[in-house]
Image: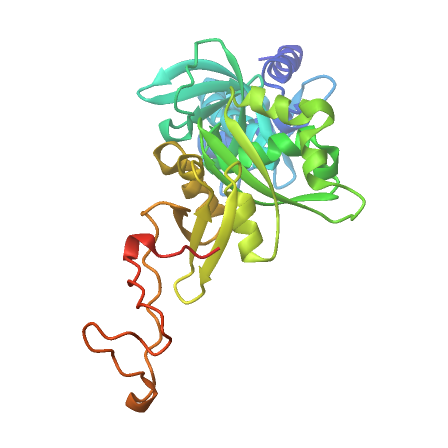
Length: 359
């Protein structure tokens, strides 16, 4: 291998793999050094230098020049094997350095093939990413060659192998979409407090404004709904509810159950449970299909939620009346047929189903 041939090889690797030429030269020098030590049974690895302009190779053993012809065919073969390994490491480092900082970001990927239930995609020119079955959105069909946007959940390096995992079902995929669509979120004027999502069906997120002059809901929705529409389109029509954040649990629960109208919320601090009353005919909307709306609201607010409709018998039983503290405080029970002291006939006790609901 003469110098000009070596220069051509380095340039071809640079163009094909996108690796820094200096890194390639250093890898070849290290490979030749190890091969020369082994071939000549040297105590220490010699210093090998490649002229970056001419490609000429020189080697010295503790300052004494080594005749390049002594390396022979075996030395170059060994050098080639080591060089291939070094090249793989360099290529692996290049991919890792490019995508490690993309964790938590959105990338554009091209569907390559299915690996069982998992999806293998190409991102960029030299990296492959995996979308696990659990990270795919139910109802979405991915065709070979189709380009999809996805959220990078993990970038792992195991030896020379780089594994990149992407997701379309992750909650933070929605967060990043809003950050890209809403400048107020990107600059911190509007903050996404929490996200609850069942991918492919519904997402709820709470937002708050750090500037009293900026309406957090209006900023997320955009003019005529343009901003939220772009997010929904990317999610293939998934329902997205934007909820105003509140430090008051009752208000937060009211907001989280939208679009249902909530009449009253009663909290049990000890059990971290909320009893919610909704207006007539709103129960099904408050619960949602398959319990999805109340389930996401519960996750968003951090409270277990029980929902009842006013005016129906599905309400919890009324609290029992407080008993007299002493026997002397209790009025004597009238005998059968006797008129109570007030002069009015005794009223019938209300049944449990007719008990007045709290408001």
